[in-house]
Structures are given as C-alpha cells and as structure tokens.
Length: 359
Image 1 (tube, rainbow, N blue to C red):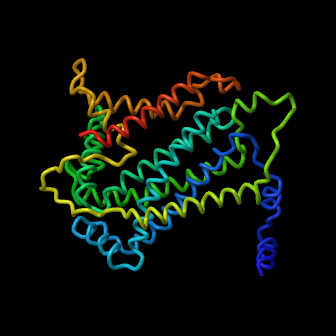
Image 2: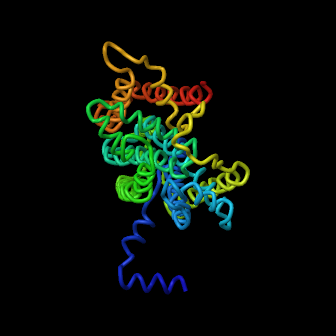
Image 3: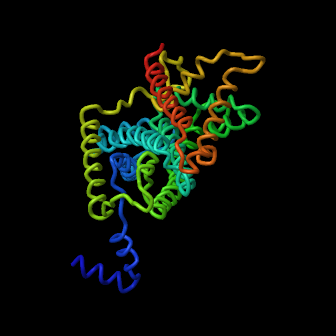
C-alpha cells in the first residue's frame, strides 16, 4: 500500500530528485558529531509546541475576564488537558535551553564561518524569536506571577532611549498591563511569531541542507590535502539517531509533566500589591539581575537605559559575528572569540543562578 502511494505521487510530482538527495546525503563523522543532534532536538520541541499549542487554543479564551478560568478549565475539566498544558510549558523551557545549547555549540565550533553566514543569521534570529515566544506566552494564563513579571519586563522595554515610551505602549496597548496587553501578547504568540518562526525554520533547514553539516576547525586542520572525513548516511543512520534523541526528549517531557506539574497560581489582580520575589522566567534572569545591579545613574545617564542599550548592542554584535571573526572566515583559529563565548556562557549561568536565589 505504501509503495503504491509512493508510485502514485512519483508519477505526478517526480520524487526522483528527493530520492537521489536522500541516498547521496551524508553527515561527517568525527569525535564532536554529538553537537549535530541539538538542532534536530530543538526542531522536535518546536513541533511539540505547535501541536500542544493548537490543542490549548481549542479551549483558551484570550480576555482578562476569562483567560485564567479557561486555563483552569483545561487543567481540571478537559480530559488530559493538564497533561497537554504541562507538556506545552515544560517543552517551552526545554526548547529555549536547547536553543541556547545549540547556539553555544555553533559559536564554539565556529560553524558560522564561510559559507554558512546566512545559516548563522537565520539561527540567531530564531533564538530571539524563541525568547519572544517565551515572553509573550508567559502572560497568557493571566495569573499573579505572570502579570507582575510582564509588568517588569515591558517596563525594561520602556527604558530604551528615544523609542522606549512608544515600545512600552506598543507592547502593553496602553500605559499599564491590562486586558489589551493580554490580547496583544496572544496575537503575537499564536499568529505573528509563529508565521515568522515558520519562515525562518524553513529557511534555516534549507540552508543547512544546501551547505551540509560543518566540520569543526580543530578537525578540519588535521585533514591532509585532498582528504575528506568519512560520511554517515543521512538516511537511515543519522535520522534514526535523531529520532532516538526525540524519544528521550519525549520521555523527559512526560516525566516532568506527570511528576512536576506547572502551577497555575492565583488569578491576576491589577490592584493588588506586588508580591515579594517577583522575577521573570529563568531565561531572562541574567539580564534582569544585571539591570538590578546597575546604579540608578551613571555619568548623568539613567543606569537602566545604559544597561538596555548595552544588551541591544550585544544582540546586534551576535547577529554579525560571522563577519567580525575574520580569522574563522579564513579558516584559522580565533581564540579571542572562543574566550568571549566561554565568558558569555559563564556569565549567563552564574547570573541566572544568582538571580534565581537573590532576594
């Protein structure tokens, strides 16, 4: 039956090029090939997010009056609704964690060097989009914690020089976090960001397929002139390993959803006093805690504004890293960028942990 279906499609769309691509494509085999699987695992979690998100949309109502109650209904009344919501929440966090791991592996292995500059660009934009998904989705349950954390997060956007007030009103739909903010974040989370992410994922995958898997500089340097690395067949060898990693992720998600359910908390009350210890999700903690440490005024400028500008500059530098790392562009070692990546990783881990436990 399957073969008849394939033959039927082959007659109408000509699958010969696809068959040839699958048969010929290989993946370089070396000691650091384990990092190749991070991208596929991130893609799998993105698919989990899409699937569970669609199921949640069947019952979710994006209004300040009904959002909390609709989520409460999902986790208490809808059959397996608690499981879908927990998987959606946990997979979002694992997705961002793996996206960061993938980012640092690519950076440290210098996989952004020629001719993969556009692959890096699409990947770093996807990382920013994943953070946008996390930020916009955090408010949707409309509980106390997400409400005040969103207030703090959007307030930081308001610290951007010149356009800060405009950005704050654009995000909030006004001067304060209200039902209008919830509607805007809902539109971002289920329409605008998914459309952008789908286009970027498609472009990123196309670039990866066209350029192939990169080889680390340390491995490339050991090759003799004209020598090539042994290749692992993409199908079925590499794909089956990828699928095995997906199964492991699925088992981890199921365990987390079953044994560590995502708490809903209390419904947001805009007139309530801000509870102590309000902080954003872990993937924004390093930035949040850094901004807290900056003095209120530095040389006549507002400290928070300078901090926001500094983080914006870092983001722009990350986008153009392939063009700044001239040594990697020439196929040479670039220890300065390796050190910067390691320092960045240490900073994120350290300040995330401190931000989590600091009072």
